[in-house]
Length: 272
Image (cartoon, rainbow, N blue to C red; front, top):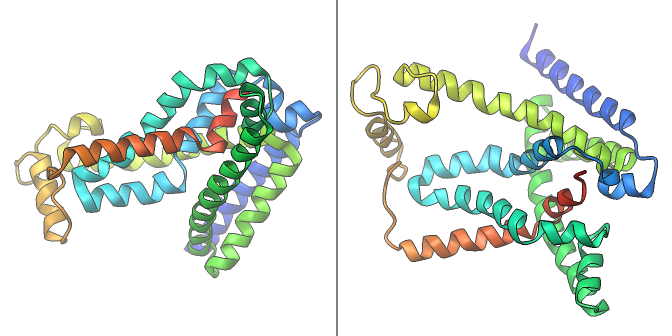
């Protein structure tokens, strides 16, 4: 069996799973379409929210950024993760209390201003468009590799799949498809990390493996990683940054930006 046939099988099964979930979780009311009926279990909602974090930007780009730039690129990890904490602590409790379906509705009522609501709409459209461009481009690249088609064709395929389960199931369908995505991504993240750590350090737990020695050379694994990436022309894995203030400010900027992402904010309307 060729690699292309294997790719088709796995991609086809993924599509079938998504379509099946969309049909099973199809929205039957306005509330279900916009906020999944407000009846999603917190654990399930957490899995869907985590799938938002483990998107194309995180899964494809951040790993490359940290590998290429070392310690300095950890601002992306801290900023994106910290943004979810910021949202959960400072915004989420108030969003649910107002009982609205959208953030502009919440802002308009909160500040008694239609102008504020319109500004929120413009901000949401701008942020959503920018974000979707990056995500769909990543999806197009992934599908073009798996299905051996042009990137533009892969993008169209991804758009059709998303359109089908988003329109049919609304946020309810999207939530449960992202739970499936979460499971797939967790497996895809964990298995390679475990076996790489086992191969390089003899320790199956990647987090502990970073404090172990390289099996073949006997040197600390971080020293070995520094040698490998510098030999490839990248920055040292543990290289310090010259200006830590810029790093802190950049992290804070990413936190605030992440907390304002529309598809993340809407998650907090869903829980029971």
